[in-house]
Image 1 (tube, rainbow, N blue to C red):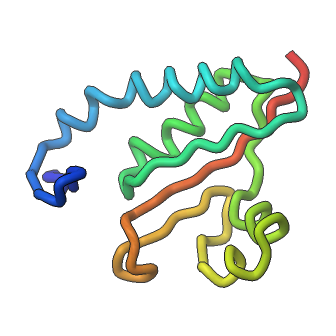
Image 2 (cartoon, rainbow, N blue to C red):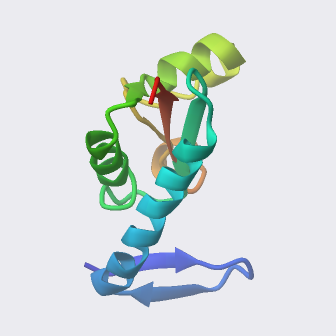
Length: 120
């Protein structure tokens, strides 16, 4: 499955799924490192500008499944409660993840997950 990759200069290139697979260990490691730095009770936000589940929800579910101190929050609800009507009106989805789509929101395909860090 080809992916379209937008660079900082705005150029577009196509890459196969193999390209994506190279990034998955790094993305998981970054989420683990962030969770290690947050005190119990704090929240880690994992955000990507990707629509692909392998880079988004699957990374979060894999890491949370390996780290019992991490609990997944309902990102659209938390954002609506903390940011207010601007976030509530975006239509980020039903949760637990938030997702923006180019065809619906006029943005890149941005993803967000929020994980609370519990006692270790």
